[in-house]
Image (cartoon, rainbow, N blue to C red; front, side):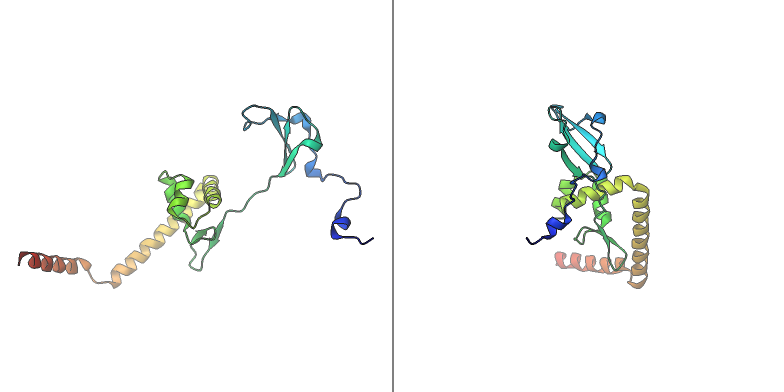
Length: 173
C-alpha cells in the first residue's frame, strides 16, 4: 500500500497539540450569545466555544486566535498605503477622526477592503501615539513641499488680479 503525505503527517497517537487542551472548568459565559447558551474557553492561542448541553472536547468549536499584521505597506516615497490600494494611511485615519464609519470609508475609497479599514482603525486605536507622530511627520513634509513650491512659483495673486480685470472688462463691453 502506498503512503501519502497525509498518512505520513498523521500523529499515530492522535493527540491534541498543547494549545488545544482546554480547562472546561474555567468556561465563562459567551457575551456574544444572546441566549447565553454557550461558553468560551481559552487554551494557549486557541479558543473553544462550548454549548451548555455538550461540554465535551469532541463537540467544541475550536479556532486559533492569532495576531494579524496591519495591512500597511510603505511606498518608495516613505508614505504608508493601506492594503493593496494606493490610499494613504492619513486619509483613512482622518476620515475616521471626522466621524466616518468603516463602511463609509470603503464607499469613499472603493479600492479599500472593509477588513483592511477595520484592521487599520484597530491599529490606530491601539497605537495612537505612533500614528499621531507619523501624521505629524507627514504634515511637516507637506508644509515643506508647499514652501518649496511657493518659493519657485511666481506670486499668483498678481496673475489672478489681471485675469479678474480682463474678465470684468469683457463683461462690461
